[in-house]
Length: 339
Image 1: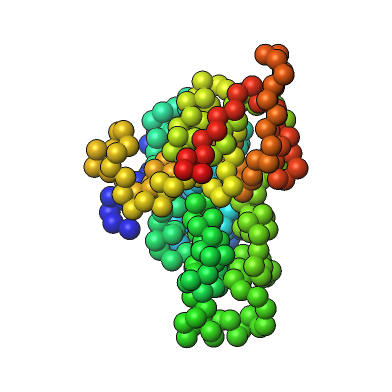
Image 2: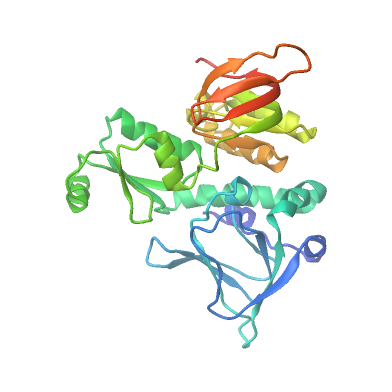
């Protein structure tokens, strides 16, 4: 990570920022060596260091310290908005003078208010969420491990699903020398094989099984919404951003994950607002962060099996999904692209 990316990924909040956060936060102290957050914790709060520091640790790499957060810095990335289980440990390091680490803790239900009501803080957090997750992927953070042949459609679909849903993972081609060694260590069984880091090895998993294992699945959508968007490509995400920003209850459904066909593009130059172009991954990440910031819900993998059109203007449309849920929507936007 270069100097400019490092500054964006790990900004130090100033006194005015901290004052804004204090209005929404509670204070908490941790002794040196005490765990602030642990691998697998879900629905975590925003943790901002007020005094002392916190080590961010990769438990899948012999507890290597990834970064240390000092006063004015905060813990977390995109999973603060997706509400998925975290993939690291956070340990208090004390203030260096025998005193505890003191933090400001913003509850999950107040985080979106902070992002939208305090733009100067919200912008710093959103940018950091994006850059930190990119850095994890580029820096070789192991996360989920996938073992399968390069020419296997199932293996590549698993890789695409993890990539689209912002899950750090490593892939080993099972037909290479190293891959055959790893395959032998796993023992006999079908491939592709997926190790989600919880000692459970999945063999030829469905996307639903993979989503549960990787912590992506947050429950089958159900109930009433104002807008249901079927398809999470650029058009679907844009619609969700507009709707959610106006206070409409919005859910986005996709059988694979956000990004659509554009998500696989190395450079997109015909999208408004980015004259120098950007990658499909960047476009999808920015769009998803934006819609989550406004409260839209992203659900994947899920397929729509049937749509019942409303009988009259006072009745909702009904969406029946492959996970067994029924969504009642005032409006349905089918944004399925080339499909």
